[in-house]
Amino acid sequence: MKPNLLKLLTYSFILFFNPINAQEIWHESFSVPNKGVWGNSDGTGINSDFTDITKWTLDFSQITLENEDDYAKTVTTSGGRFECCDINGEVIWRSEIIDISAYKNISIQLNANETGSSTNEEQKYLRAFYILDQGEAKSFESNGDNRGNWGQAVVSQTGLVGNDLQIVVYMNNHYASNKVILDEVIVSGEEKNPVIIEPGDIVLNEVLFNPVPDGEDYVEIYNNSEKEIPLNKLYLASRDNDLELTQVYALTSEKQKLLPNEYLALTKDTLGVFPWFSISCPECFLQMEKFPSFNNDDDYVVLLNNEMEIIDEFYYYEKMHLPIFYDREGIALERISFSAPTNEVQNWHSASTQSGYGTPGYQNSQFMNEEAQKITVTFQPDAFSPNNDGYNDNYSIDLSMDSPGYICNILVFDSAGRRLCKLADNAALGTHEQISWNGEDEAGNRLPIGPYIVMVEVFNTDGTIERFKDGVVLTDRFE
Image (cartoon, rainbow, N blue to C red; front, side):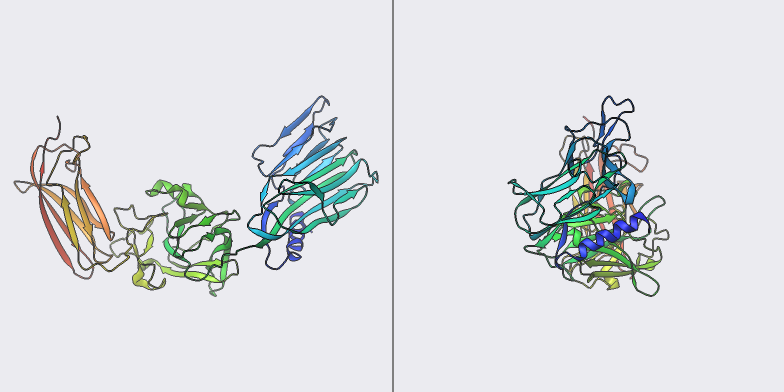
């Protein structure tokens, strides 16, 4: 049997015997090797490396290491574990302070193993203790004291209640041909007030399934409830050709919450998203360790809770995009309304040109919270002076559409009717957009003081066309 498989089976065995409603609170599997202490080849000192180790500490003040084969550190054996070999003294392994205040019926379990033939109980042991609420250290109720040639043991403690917990393990091994091993330290418990995630609490809100070359897919979710949703209870998946769920991956193992009305963009790597989009909320992204691969032509995006119940599901296909987009790489599909059904085709639309073709982590460019009655376009101010004095430096055009799907052209002319610049050229509009003019022509040249005419045309594929015109004065361009 492969070592990693054995480790997995041991971990599954431990979880199986926990209470049925228990969930993991804290876990250390020692997967990063060579963290701890080891001796020098000349026996003159102790080397140590605890870089990036934040979940535990090691007191090694009472040991003597005579050569580089003497150590108390993590190793790669069996997928990762902590070993002591010929340390001539005692080390004390301590977990960080673990917050257990939101849980009841706390259980702690760890693997305590040894190899070799020594039966010396004073020089070869592993003793495990726990400390509740920074009180007195108490020995584990089952296999807390292991000495000599004990073989393998699952050390356990059940039925704990408190606010915080620390695990303390004392280890000693004076023999080069023996090892004392600590592995799979797991704290679990039952939530005092569990959050039940139901269909509709979280909705799929935006999907980029055909990124630019070297880019990454992303899926945005939105908390449509009044609940604080624990993200470690959510899974993202797809479906195979038989419509069976596949690539079911946890969003995270960390204790993070999605608050009401918050957006969260899920991706495998933000470096495949950030360079191509306007990112107004970097903290509204979550990099998943594993992310489903979604097809470019059509596929299913499935969101599940920890009971594997479907919370939301979206079937997309490439032709849902606006027909004017011949090349659809790097263009996201956005949800229009939270209240309309997810799989209603009319509830999705290509992200707008002005938004950069995607709005991951914040409100969609095509979002509509109520039905607008008509198209409105407003212009302001009547005169502007782009001299960077902070007052009327830009001329703004605000556009509000009665539905998604409109395309826009905006032209600027001088008083003689000569076209000077195009502020929008067949741009896909969002439901609410603002487009600004800085007083320059298409070549970036500064235009002279005087009156100008701005023409706005909006149209859709249904044949609706509306035109708007405004006059504006460019004044006091430079002092």
